[in-house]
Structure formats: C-alpha cells, structure tokens
Image (cartoon, rainbow, N blue to C red; front, side, top):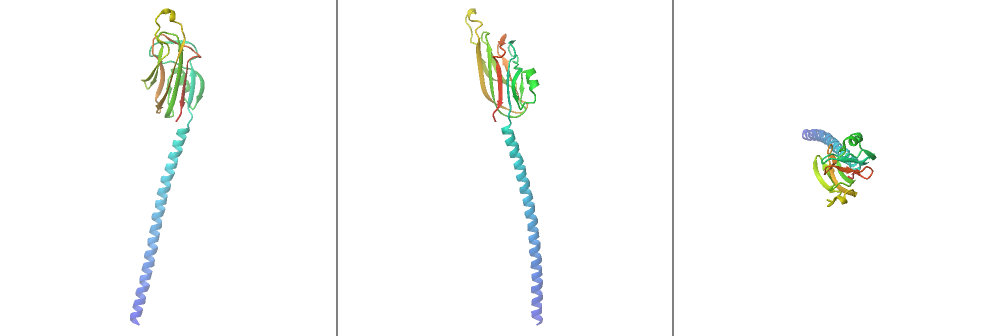
Length: 194
C-alpha cells in the first residue's frame, strides 16, 4: 500500500509538473505569437504606406503650357521666357517659372517636353537643357544663301521625354545670336506622364 501511495504521489506530482510545464509553454508560445503578429502587422502597415505614397507619386498631375507673350529677340545662350501661362496644374512655383524661364521640378518623374518656336533669323535654333546640360538642338530656320531669302518665317519643334528629379531645372535657350522668338507662335508644354 505504501508503494501504491508513493506511486500515486509521484504520478500526481508528475501530472502537476507536466500541467504547469504545459501552461508555461502555452503562455510563452502565445507571447511569441503576439510579438510575431505585431512585427508582421507593423511591416505590413509600413509597406501599405509606402505603396500609397508610390501610387500618389505615380498619379500626381503636373502640367504647364506657356507661350512667349510678345516678339522678343534673344542672344545666343539666353533663356527663352514663356511667361504667358495658358495652363498650370500641380506647380507651386509658376511665378518663378514666368520670370526666369526655368522650370524647376517639384515632383519627380518622367516628363514629356514639347517646344515650338517661330523665327525668321538666318540659321535660327534653340536648345532644350536640363541642369545646364544640352539635351537637344532644334533648328528653326535653314542657313539662307541670299539676303532675299531673309524674313521667311519657320517653326521648329522639339519633343522629348526627360526624367526629372526634385529641383532639376529645365529651360530652353536660344542657339543663335539675334534670334527673334514670335509671341503667340512660340510655346512650351511640360507634362508629367509617370
């Protein structure tokens, strides 16, 4: 009987120890799972915020169309000013653009730039520039062989896609000296496409 009592006590003690061990393991497992859920929840929340930001950036609408207000003759390397804004969307520094002739990117992305300029000067050309670097030359008027060919109006058009980052600067410069740019017939359009 003593032996049976000892066995019963050992079994009871073992059951209590196993029960306590099981409860402790379950509690520890529950704490670990809660931590994992919190970490995963925070990571998912962070990824969702990043995705929202990327979608917002990709769908931002930025556009400006502006024309030369009157006929102005520019010297070689001068920035052509398109100060008569016809449309402006998503641009905070329009006044700076109008006065300087330089578009400063506020929202990074892929932009489409289109420029057309009317002039009659011999060998008229203009340059599309980003951060001072030449992107493209556009010839408006051919080299004229005789003075009788002067005063023939031509329009040159340049269109290109440009990747712009925040604070990148884009402008159009006269490529020849004494190049008249005709107001109303010379315009610039910049549109964020992505």
